[in-house]
Length: 399
Image 1: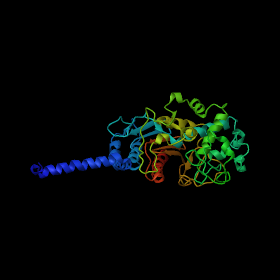
Image 2: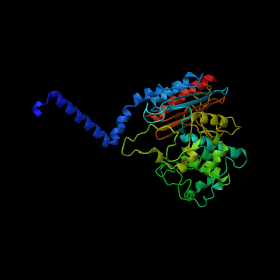
Image 3: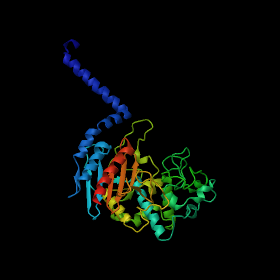
Image 4: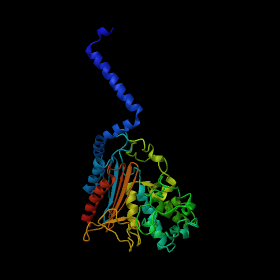
């Protein structure tokens, strides 16, 4: 029987066997499959760029930024919204809602993205409102509000103030061996084990240095709840900022029906398989728990920046820092950037979770940019700073 087979038949059989072997390998090896998927990104990026859609008369640089995000920063889906100093709204979107391009609907201005740490704007603004209403002061001790703090082993915890929590100077250091954070680092404390504050040791004496802390903002969320008759933080914020009239919603451990998919795949045995169950979303609420679209983000940030001082653009008078660096100066809600003493100042608040990034920028005249992306650059800091510089150049020109 085999004598009658031609050489071409053997080649076909070998090819079939090779295809079967390769398919079997990738079927049983999800990490290899994920790495192969990452190799397709340049193609997916170009398909995403081809879908860019902008509102009428939008500045061309909005499309340039989402193009940069797609081609250079691992974000095949993006929304950007810009409210110029005259109050005009412009926006652009690109990419696909689902993981696979061409097989799902394209992104619109209504598609939902997670806001990550940009959520801190609402927490800070709500705290500043309590201060302006004389229900709280920047120098109020946390222990005056969180009465579970009654016998701390580290007496410095008694000295933590609202100001220090806003400025990330309260002594919580998530990068230490015993770091305090709700992201799986250290002992779970907020919001369900506040008595645990009596047991921990701070990473440093409050107000001696700056260390970014999600735990600090979770505690600020609890302060907001206590001063609103123990109404849950999420209910306070939803009412105070009229979520019913916007796309804003708090996230949970599952994707919402109108939510974009995120450009994250596990590429190592220590990775995270499911980004939706990776975090404690109850503890995350006041630090990184919001979602919505870029237009609503820009409009709400615009309204916050227009409020009387202290507002989200306010800086602490005693906080000396270098404003020519992106991450050196923490205000009450945002970080100022001013490359030279003679140049314009732009204020930033950005955030990242697995497979997504967010950014708000506000200039001195009230111009606001909100950028939401479903990916993170390979070099997160360098990629983020590059986009911030692009936005800075265009906002500074408009002043």
